[in-house]
Structure formats: structure tokens, C-alpha cells
Image 1 (cartoon, rainbow, N blue to C red):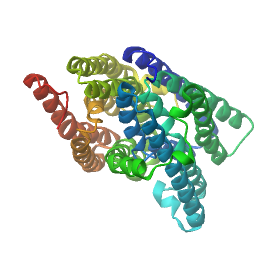
Image 2: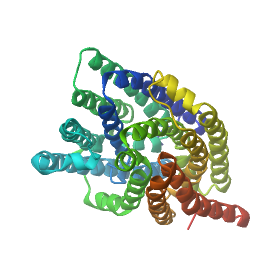
Image 3: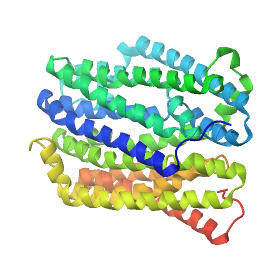
Amino acid sequence: MIPVSLGSYASSLVAGLARVLQIATTVALVPLLINYLDPEQFAIWLAATSLMAAARFVDLGMGSCLVNQIASNTCIQELSEIRESVSSAFFSLASLGLLVSFILILLYPYIPWERLLGAPSPMAEQLSGPVLLSTLLSLCAVAPLSIVGQVRLGLRESHIHSLWEGITYFLIFLCVAFGISIGLSMTSLVWSFCFLPVFILTFNYYFMIRKHGQHISPNIRSFNYKSWRNLIRDGKYFFFNNVMGTMFFLFDNFIALHLLDVHAATEFGLGHRLAFAAQTLIGVMLVPFWPVYQNALSSGDLHAGQRAIRQAVVLSIVLAVPAGAIIATAGDFLVSTWTHGAISIPRGVSVALAVWVPVFALGAALNSFMNVPSAIRLQLWISAASGLGALALKTSLALWYGAAGIVWGNIIGYGLFALFPLSVIFWRRARQGSREIRVI
């Protein structure tokens, strides 16, 4: 049997501490970058580095399939299947990353990079291509290594992955701060920000293989076409779900750059980073409950599954309500202090963000239990409806209410098309006392 280490709450605590370190890194870097870059460069930095959020779906959903498979097979010890799946995912993603990198480099001169960022000046146009290319190439390099976090999650070792992430954030701060001190260009700073995680993931993977040996070590001889086909078949639902979540909710900085002026986009970008810090902190602390739920499904333990849902919902509320209150009452003060008075958040934006954080947290708690095979198709429809609804609403409301309209579009779209149906689904399941903790 693959060893199980810390409980869900302990894993959540370690993940939360790692995310606090990430937040601290961001807090420390922003004043340095504001003083080093001009407003246009800083706005481009915010937009380009937010692309790294796409790392959550560069595994094409295969990583999420591995979580479910590993969490299930810890009960029945089908470890040979795990190795086949890990090897199939790793080598297929490595091949795809190399292919996409080659295409990007080949087509680089012909892609209108400046249009993607809505570059407002000739200087910004010159930066758009190198900055976006470096970010996209780093995502290609991350692709095969991204499964390490999912494998550790399935092994109930997400706390170890969180520790490695904490090391990554600290080293990113040191590299970017050193780059600023010696006068590196913005493109070089982006390269250090984006490619350092690749090296840390490599070390993370190496030590995981040393601990578990052949069970999770990728081997080209273990590549199995049937396993790969199954990963693609089941992973496509996770992939499209993650793509929609990222495009519709995490790329708001791009919408702000296109619909707002540079100053308003920068204000929104920093307010968004403040709320996103709370979102990611809550999100990573909810992740350890997913394999617990899948393990309960596999073993038929009704009470364990119900307990995992209750614990996740309570934890999301306990974390989100204080976070929202802090953003509402002290968000402007925090950002103003953060930037030494250079930038502040409009009151309307801070209030909207304070409402968004609890809405997101409760939805994330419920949505995490839709990652099991029996519910993933329904989750895809819910994500599509909430994403498209939010996208239409925030682009429309931004024209009327500016930056606050973008946030309220997310609140209304996500609340109406995701949080409401998820709440009804889980309430009905609890009410009916179903023998299976399963959403169909």
C-alpha cells in the first residue's frame, strides 16, 4: 500500500502556509517592480505573469485523472497501472511541449503579440512579443512536470508539494530582486519568474521518485497506449473545465487592459492580486479533501465522504468571511501601503472583491467534489455556463461601472450559474441520504 501521511486538515495547513509565503513574495516584489518599471511595463508584467495560471491545465487534465486513479488504487494496490499511467502522461506531455515550443518559435515573427495585450505604445509593442513568448515557452516546459503535484496529491502528500512550492516562491523573489538590483531588462525578469519553477519541479519530481521508486517513476518502456487513451478520454473533461475556469475568471487583467485605461487597469490588477491571494490560499487548503472523497467513494465509506464535504464547506466559510471583511475595510489601505502611495483601489472595487471572495470560496469547496469520475461531465456543463455567463456580464458591466463591473460580473455569473446549482445538488443529496456519495 502507498503510504498516507498527514490528515486533510494538516495538509491544508501546510498548503496554506506555502501560499502565505507566495503572498508575502508578491507583496515584497510589487513595490520593487513599481519603482523599477514604468506604469505600462508594470501593467504588462501583471498581465503576462497572470498567464502562469494556465499551468493548471497544461497537463490536459491527465493529472486530475492520476489523482483519482492513485487515490483509488491505494486501497487495492494496483500499482503497476499507476506506473503505466504516470509514464504515459509524462512522455506524451513532454512530446507535446516540445512540439508546441517549436511551433511558437517558428511562428514568432508572424504573431501579432501586441494585439493580445492591447499594447498602448510603441515601447509596449516591443515588449509584448518577448514577454509573452517566454511565458508560453515556460508553460511548455512545465507541462510534463506539472503532474508531480497531482501525483503527490493522489498519494496524500500534497503537504510535501506545498513545501516545494514555498521554496519556489522564495527563490523567485530572490532572483527577481537580484535582477532589479543589477538592472536586468523586463524580459529577463519575466524569464526568471517563469522558468525557475521548472527547475524546482524537476527537483521535486526527483525526490518523489527516490521515495516511491518504480511506482511513480516515468519509464518509456511503461508507456501504454491503452492507459494514454484512457487518460485522454477522461482527462478532456478536466482539461476543458480548467481551461474555462482560467480563461473566464483568471484572465480578468487582460479584459481590464482592453476595456480600461492604463491607470484603471493597474488599480484593478493590484486589487485583483489582493483578492486572488485570498482565493488561492483558500483553494489550496481545500484541495487535500478531494482525494479523501475519492478514496471514500472507492471504499464505499459513506460517512467519510459526507464528513469530507462538511469539513471543506466549513473551512471555506471560516477562511473566506474574514478575508472578505479585510478586503472591504482595509483593501485600499493595504494596496496604498503596498505601493507606497502610488496606487489605491477605488471603494467600489474593494467592496466588490470582498463579496467575490466568499462566493468563490463556497463554490470552490463544493466544486472540488465534482472532480470525481461520476460527476465530471456535470461539472463541465456548470463551468461552461458560469464562465460564459460571467464573461458576458463582466464585459458589459465594465463599460458601465469600470473595474468594479468586472468583479460584479464574476459574482453574478458564478453565483447564478455555479454556486446556486452546486448548492442545490449537494443539499438534495444530503436530504435524500443517498447510499452513494456521488453526483450524477
